[in-house]
Length: 216
Ligand code: TMP
Image 1 (tube, rainbow, N blue to C red):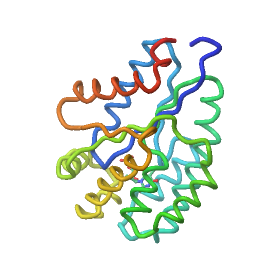
Image 2: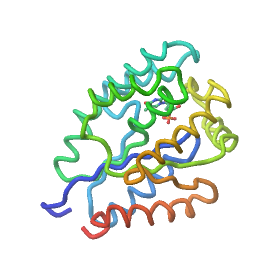
Image 3: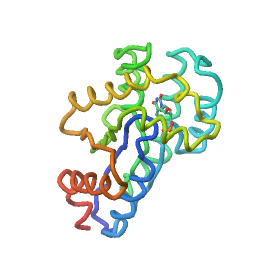
Image 4: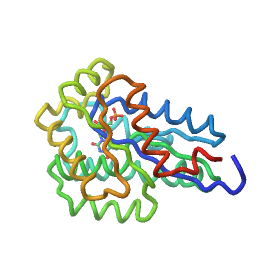
């Protein structure tokens, strides 16, 4: 990394089981190979405080939280994550890649859930403001495939997967809608096929949008 490198903030979004973690690892390795510091992180979570909130959010029954409480918990986790992990990393010139960010709140709580867009936008203005991602990659996959992959990973964090296929279909549509609204920032990536094929699609977009990352 050169002293003058500017930080860059990239988020990955998409339905459950779209292969985000594999793709984040591949992209992070490619950017590190080009000589940059890369911080990979996730939401909800990413900082110790936000990871504690993650546990509250992802374990338990589907109706454990009301829509507004759920969005407030997501936002509280995001505020801590931004303050303690993302902003300091960007300030020292690192590339931050997060597995989910605020578009997930718009998709899951705002557009597919019962909260509505206005509240989500108000929370965004409060917590994120102009500190949002430079580039967002939305991994798109038919929901049956995504749920199969997500189910295969198992574990306790099944609260959102357990909300059913109709909800997941709405989430998929919501991400596509977000991409239509913000075409300069958001790019939809076909997440079907081998990990290598998907990685090549992603690399293509990142090289065009943030060429400096590969010319450190
Ligand atoms: P993941 O770590 O497997 O992606 O799981 C996180 C779950 O939390 C996923 O089902 C999406 C959900 N989620 C929201 O509903 N709203 C949010 O703002 C975020 C960050 C995640």
